[in-house]
Amino acid sequence: MENPSSSNIEEVQQECYDEWMSLQAKRMTDLKRALANGEKNDGALRELIQSVIEDFKDYARKRSEHSRRYSSNYFAPTWNTCLENALLWMGGCRPSSFIRLVYAMCGSQTELRLTNFFRDNIGGLSMALGETPGRVDGAGESMSDLTAEQLFKINELHMKTVQEENMLTKQSATLQEDTADMPIAVAAFHKERIGEADVEVERALDKYEDEMARMLAEADKLRLTTLTKIVEILTAVQAADFLLAGKKLHLSMHEWGRERERRLLEACGDDSGGEFSGG
Amino acid sequence: MENPSSSNIEEVQQECYDEWMSLQAKRMTDLKRALANGEKNDGALRELIQSVIEDFKDYARKRSEHSRRYSSNYFAPTWNTCLENALLWMGGCRPSSFIRLVYAMCGSQTELRLTNFFRDNIGGLSMALGETPGRVDGAGESMSDLTAEQLFKINELHMKTVQEENMLTKQSATLQEDTADMPIAVAAFHKERIGEADVEVERALDKYEDEMARMLAEADKLRLTTLTKIVEILTAVQAADFLLAGKKLHLSMHEWGRERERRLLEACGDDSGGEFSGG
Image (cartoon, rainbow over the protein chains, first blue to last red):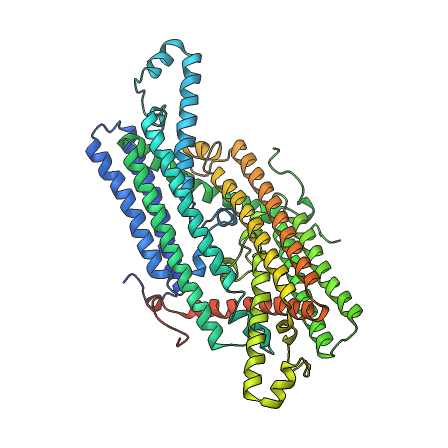
């Protein structure tokens, strides 16, 4: 049912991605609503957070199923904009970028709080003392309440995540280099006709795609672990704000990327050095 | 003339790539012919080798011109097969894979020479003693003549290249992470509507693409330097054999990738775990 035999693998992969993007948009609304309601029931909020994490787990499981022997597609998917593909690391975002997002949210909210404090004495003072204003105006505000202990843990996680990211990057570099070795390079050299079929080459490329599928699964595991650990370090409201920020960033990048592609198609060749955003 | 205003940037970039691929096919024929003729005139062979290097320099220069502010396209080009895109490092092949190719050619040729030696006493012996057979049968054979000194230099170059590759990889990781920071992530969070235009975001994304264009140019420079140094270490015949192997590998990968894509489109969703090459 999930893999109708009338669909080819690329269609199945694309469907899986489309479902994932719709689900993200839905979860964005769920998180927004829960936060706007000033959801004080930590239990209910934690449940929603858990569902969001489970979504990702589920998506990673499906990708893993669809990627065996056909994994190349995931390393620069046709359904992504070229901006997104230029930002891709192992078929998705860098796990360390989740942590950068925590810092960005924390920094911007702290800045905002200080600005408000100076601008508006009384209101600013009450905010600085931790009285939560309406969520609609103070969206993401919880992130300025990160304690020193939380920041310490996030920093520890950052260092560990970067280390594991580097390890995977190195493994993938080795796999990439291997394709310039025997048997592929040598077979390519000795063929009279370019692209002539070769069983040994096919086997080597199958093996390469299998290995890359394994790397994709490893990377997804690291993304999932990082996400889970961040959410554990944060309070329920902070975790919801953080996940909401992540979804909004992902969905926005897709749209901004599309808009830039549209402009790329309109831009004339001799504009290549020019400005188009007036920036 | 080179950038007709009727073409959009993507078309200009694609044309530039198509020209590059045609030129590679032409150079492949040039190199083959020179080697098959048993070109003993080192000067003429060196001249051809120099032209091949100049081709790459020229291509890199054109890419650099076309990539400013529109560089994303080069990090997972639409004109590549997904297999090629999965193998991409900074818009091209890993410079270290050039060196792996030297080792692969050297290893396979030495193996071949030994096999021939044992299989066919007299003929094998004469080959082992360095008598060059007709180039058509002994294509690439020069690579088994790499001296200890050459291998030492190649090894030194390998280590240096990997170091510089890692440095560029790290820089690109930082750039990627930056997009999950202010202002992009924070703007995405505070927008009511996903994808709403934002001057600050546009400016940040322009800056990101500019930086990535700079990285692409740096990576091309490293590819060029590595290529040039390898060719300097090798004899003229070895260099020609090596460049020929590189061109054949690149052109073959493109064709093999296409063939795999064709099969991917034919493969049914529920085949995703199956074998298709009988391997």
